[in-house]
Length: 325
Image (cartoon, rainbow, N blue to C red; front, side, top):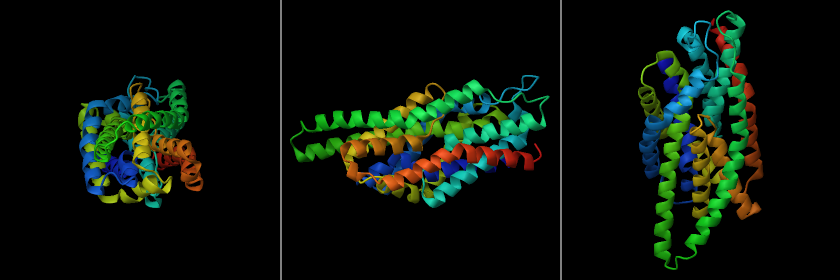
């Protein structure tokens, strides 16, 4: 049952967060849908296997304190892992169905916090609660993530446009721009695998143990299934619903978001690729021209991301109690 729930969560991750890798590139008219999906599938697997363990360790071992015997609570209570996966997957599915970008990192971390509080309530003699210093550090990283992404996207936009202006041949200009966007999309997919696959399956790794690379590969394949079957809605929102963007802006937003998230991954901080790409698109769009940004759409997405931690935390707390944790 845990593997089924884990597959469904990673499937939702592919359905929703594929847009974070290629939504702006498709919206900017640079990548076709099929080529974009292929890029995502290949590089997500690479990123998940090579670096997914960093966030996997944080989510699975760094949020809830060990038991009195030093054991990981997820290894003792399969209901805990199941409650986390069900809650995060349900929230992700609802967001994807409505066409909103959603963060699996926000959802999964919040679910773990909710389950940790439930276990501390029902088994205080075993589970000592949360590592609040780690939770606080993650929350701070969530707040900084879209801000850094917006700033980086603006700076990258300035650098790229200055460089491209030196290319006088139109054909050469288009070739260089498309090559850069392909590289940015591949890098974004790599970061998605490293950040989101690791964060989404941290509780699975904590429960089963074994090499984290196998868990990451399982998650990446499930993500690929979601990418191929149900990713169009959110791609449309990110690609054209937030801002009317051109290829250069798409490239800046993509690179700014990916670089921001990758930096957080190096510290084991599972942040939101959805926040990062929304910040990147908004940053590049706002600095380029305020008229290009759909403030109403952006506000709705921001509100959804803001209420996610509390909503998923409460949901996982309730599910854990219902499952008899």
